[in-house]
Length: 97
Image (cartoon, rainbow, N blue to C red; front, side, top):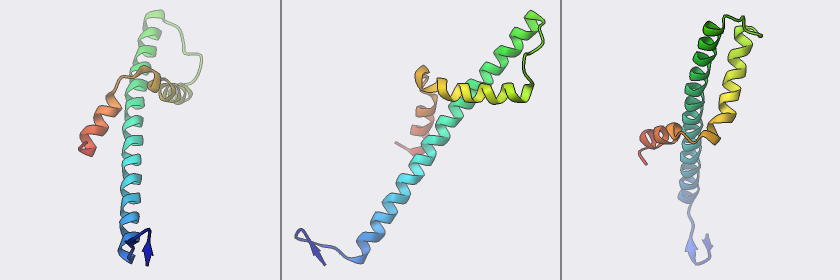
């Protein structure tokens, strides 16, 4: 088959599928790196909360499980505005770009 003066063979579809798979893999890697950065920030926030409780001597106002979930979700929303660059640096290192 000829499209726009270029001959297209069955091999072209496999190349497109290969490119799509590579793009999906890069997107998964970028998401994993972003999640790692959020995990790191949430860990730091959890440590901060524990230190504040130890100094203040107050009991937490919610259970540990809910607080951990809240902290991770808060960290995920906080990370893009912080621009730490940890996730991006990790992505570049792992992707070879």
